[in-house]
Each structure stands twice: as structure tokens, then as C-alpha cells.
Image 1 (cartoon, rainbow, N blue to C red):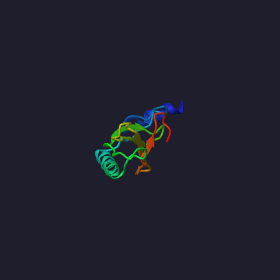
Image 2 (cartoon, rainbow, N blue to C red; image 1 turned 90 degrees about the vertical axis):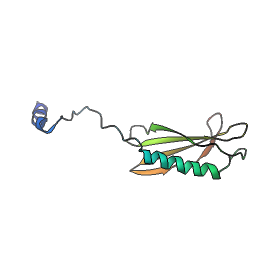
Image 3 (cartoon, helix red, strand yellow; image 1 turned 180 degrees about the vertical axis):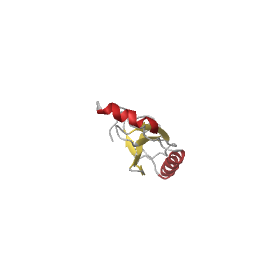
Image 4 (cartoon, rainbow, N blue to C red; image 1 turned 120 degrees about the vertical axis):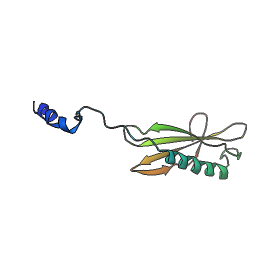
Length: 114
């Protein structure tokens, strides 16, 4: 029953951390991170043609997601070509150990293979 003593002594300092309580939520990417990711991939899109048909690429679309159980986040970047087949290109920008890492754009087929 020593754990009751710990909770009682902790009361003057604020809410007691419960041993089974989940960790604090992971920080989301800030406005500056999202803007930097968007600008970086907009530049990549303007200088890169579609690897399958050579058509120009449309602007990137970003979607935020958690990186599994870790406290890091990921931003999925999806780009489609302007050709009649609209080939899909994807990349993942991640935050790991406080650093922003931009992944390479890779062409995807309808089945999801590279």
C-alpha cells in the first residue's frame, strides 16, 4: 500500500501521475514544418517529370499521420502526374529525433508496388 502514500504526498504539487496513464500525446507538426514540407515538394514537383510517362506533376497533397507507437509524426505526400493515366507518386516526410527528414518521391502503380 505504499503507492497510496506516494499519491498523498504528491497532492500539493499538482495532479499525480498515474502509473497506467498514457504518455503525453505526441506533438503535431507545426505550421512552419508543414509549410517547409509543402515548399520542398512543390520545388521537387516543378523540376521532376513523371517517371512512367514523362508528363508534368501536379502540386502535392499532404496528410498527417502518427508513426506507430513512437512519439514521432509522419506526413504523407501524394502527387499525381498530368498524363492521361494520372500516375501516383508518394513520399513520406518524418520527424525523428527532432529532425525533419524528407523522403524521395516514388512512382506507385495501381497495385501499390514501386
